[in-house]
Length: 420
Image 1 (cartoon, rainbow, N blue to C red):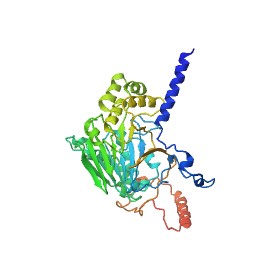
Image 2: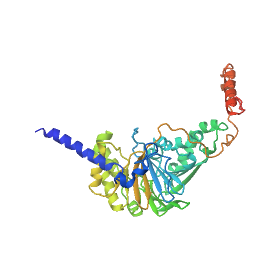
Image 3: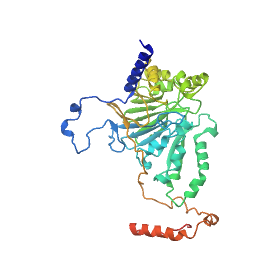
């Protein structure tokens, strides 16, 4: 008997079972009971979907929707961007918790006007939690954002001033001074305004945002210094977002009973060493002294007693997922989803519905929500004459023809001008 073959087969079966168990929670009621045949038509849209098509569903006044725009790691991959979660509330408010590398494209693929998503909260300043913030900020004018970007990040708490969020944002503005400066007068630059609010990351349950019925608090995280976790409360519901942290008493206390708790869940040490090509010591340090590994994560879930948990911050693949699930479920047997990019959670007081979103891979900028003000931000930047001297005069007639054709078609009266 070929025991090796049998063992390989059984391992494959176990992995498949693990994958099925990790799929988003669905309601498997009979179709007839949930959607009577009278609602179905050969020509009209299906009456229900087990996936989420962004922009096609009304968010109820008492409902919360959370979308993973980054569920992965600092190691870049097409499948998973680094940490980023979009929170949408039934009162119209939207918040972004962290904006790690690769996440901006996921946000854009949801087709939400940028004027609606102007509030970004950073748990800490590692690249895998804020690396795409500069692109999101700088591309605002070209993508029709007409309001300032507001950023909340850690500061105070005895941290070195050069490590603060304001210092990081000031450095970002200096880095992109040329780009901002050359755009003035050619495009609406109102979105170039940046409003930075620092919160004291060392405070326990300190209020960092309180507006329109939404309260966001921060608690310290054990992830070097100047790191925090967030607790959002609205409409009698609680969302807890860990960011990065080892298990800690503040999270266990203040995330207790959350309707949705998003906690980090790194690969177990042996698997991390193999997949990341780390030494054993490097892997052990990463998953036991800086981050919460899967076993830690399961224990935290058991102690926190959230109504629904999300495990994120690991490479979620066919071979890694069963190992992570096994480690978690050795110590926790409650509801948990293992995050992937574009996983969606609709949260109400009745419970949590988990699905996958179907993003737009060919998104264009959404229309502006306010009238364009091209002159806003100052006089048009003038390219030096020494540079414009390279323009071939033969192209004046070509450009004039382009403008004439455009004006004729659109009823406008624009004129071609290289110089203001």
